[in-house]
Length: 461
Image (cartoon, rainbow, N blue to C red):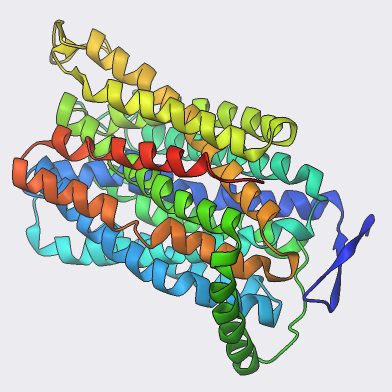
């Protein structure tokens, strides 16, 4: 062990900073988990579900929103409890493994989502909810390992590097799907002009559906470095005793929270702006599919470009985090996101900011119309700001939380990130269903970021 810190975790285990290989192993968790968000929730499977499985894009957006809301409610209720148990027990890896299994099972079931088959919709929504619960809970325990890996003055860089590495994994997974697996149903060719590998049928969208099993396999392979190289604390108490102590500690923490004004205000701000960000990523691809008629190739290419922007943004955000502080990074990121959302609402297939432009022509080159290029630029702003916002948020949590209850506070962090996470998708789904307008549904996101900015301004580090 290279460095020994002065604090103790839970007053029992001295905090030690392990070798660089342990840090690298931890970073690989983001690489392993990111394809779930890139392939399934944003750029491939969610738009495919809305466009080809659901009766129409608007109802598909509504159904996806209701499933996201249900999963978010479950995550909100359980995250702080699980975090409290983990703090009392001391271990992280068994929880990551258990919830990783849910991610793998839920993702794998998405293979059965055949186009035009309404009977499969309940199964797909259930699988999506199971996988979402798995990946979010696993992330809670992975985040809680951060303070044990590097000194406090390097937390921002570690967090930003993790997000950037995750984005790179997302880019490579998208390239794999678009270049070798998912093909245009009309031409039967992938983005690279190839026939799909493994004889995947473009007509039944097997290239889109394979993203589910691929996500599970990817997670299994690339989470191994974390399990093999990153140390975990030994169990301090049996599970039953940890459950009792954890729940007692959680009640104490919740009772103390009103006195910790900075932490309470930050958690409330995080609750609101994370809801907006999750909803934005969840529905961005679906919105593009409905607005421009994009299919997997166009949306996936759009996703690759956004992920590249996100990688650069997360890396730069990590450096700015250590230099300027996480609060400044979060504020700047939200201002960029707010500008991008408002601008996107003023872009349609035949107009940009109320100025008429030529609509996309059938069979034209990728992003050949002015409106599509405008959407692409605004999407890059979202990608570049989303990574730093999330990375700096977990850094600010670490700075505000007591060191002996870090997993518990990450559980509360996940709670505030999920307790209302069903509201954003629910509002988007409900407003889209009532108005039959995707644009009206997406407009609700402006409120989330304005409110988040106002609350964050009151947080004192």
